[in-house]
Image (cartoon, rainbow, N blue to C red; front, side):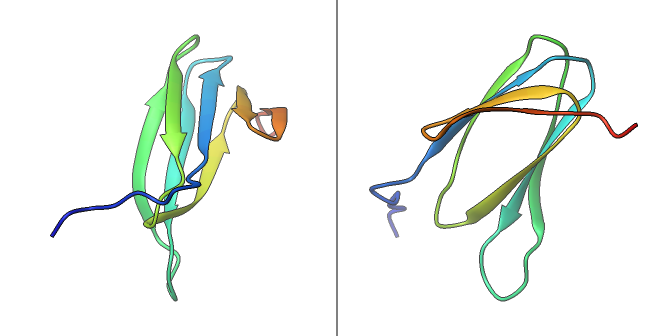
Length: 78
């Protein structure tokens, strides 16, 4: 069976400001679960996409996040 992407699937760009930024993909459906995670070091960039399987992306650590809605910075817990 061929996988099809959602026509309006949004991309998110995440750039690590410090080492150790965690990016976690969360599933769709009745049970929200972690389905993918990445660790980024300072300066690394991850381009992620919302799909039929990914309904949310969690970012932990200091990072710049760019979407079609604008830019936001995440921060480390103090």
